[in-house]
Amino acid sequence: MAESILTKQAIAHSLKALSQDKPFDKISVGEIADNANINRQTFYYHFPDKFSLLKWIYMNDLLLPNLSDLSFDNWDTKFYNVMKAMENDKPFYINTIMHAEDYIRQYMLSNSESIINRAIDLLDDNSRVSAEERTFISRFFSHGICGMIMEWATGGMQIDCELMSKYMKNMLISCENAAFRYKNGELNV
Image (cartoon, rainbow, N blue to C red; front, side, top):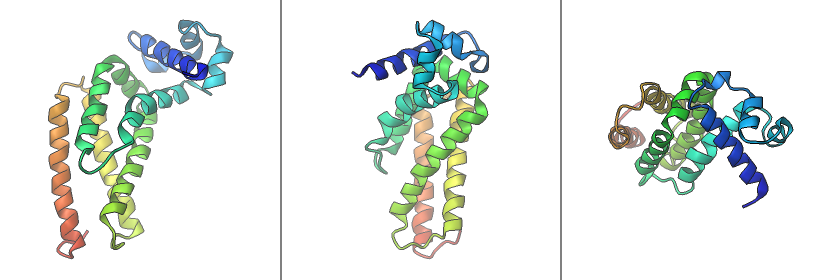
């Protein structure tokens, strides 16, 4: 593995360790660097700030492992995998969602909108959905998904990941049925 990746992982591990006892917004770059046994310049060589580090962790721990072969057939399993990974590192994710809420919300919304837009592309093969409707639909579902994940995390991750995944799958089935009705002219948005 490249030295750069190993250093980034050490820095990420440092932030996760510090997040066990201290709110994210109170953790400094200096503390992260000290805990990782590196100097601040090494931190800044890899990340411009602690928010970039946070984004890197979310991307590498949650998104990249679950986006590569994402499909309509396995999205609920991928959703479960994301939630399970969050649950396995519960103090870190609860801490960062609670203490960097706006940043995390925007990051999650941006990624989920992109994924939902790809799904709309697959479902809307006749281009019946206008650009305005597409934006509304992707934002609506993104806010719903991200809101539920954030509420689940800030509530202490009390609901079982498998049950949350099942609820989300049932919602998708209902929405998919509505989308097909819309596509066939049986339903207006």
